[in-house]
Image (cartoon, rainbow, N blue to C red; front, side, top):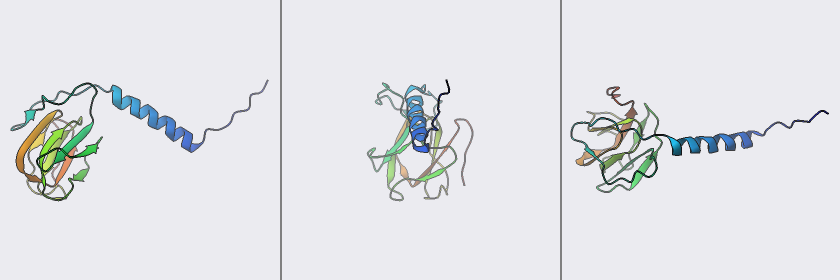
Length: 136
């Protein structure tokens, strides 16, 4: 008996792939990372499920970048207002004073680290931990 096969629609394939990626994010192991100078490990963050976001804000953590990609410069909201940061990504986060990842980088936060009271920062780029600066 010949079974007739119907090709899967592009939308159905995208839905299946999206569900598989979501499951992969939820089951990924957390990365402990080494301490960067001046950064403090975030002891208050719940560890019930891995978080793949970078959270920032003007004194309080009010904005986030979900699943940031390595090597891309991200502007942090209104230029020069972010002074509090928590790196829940799997990459090292290097902060910059200029919106285009320009200027002198710093501080750098390894996965799981937080920093508050820094000078205002306007952008961030993510690099592989221990991979060095990606300054522009």
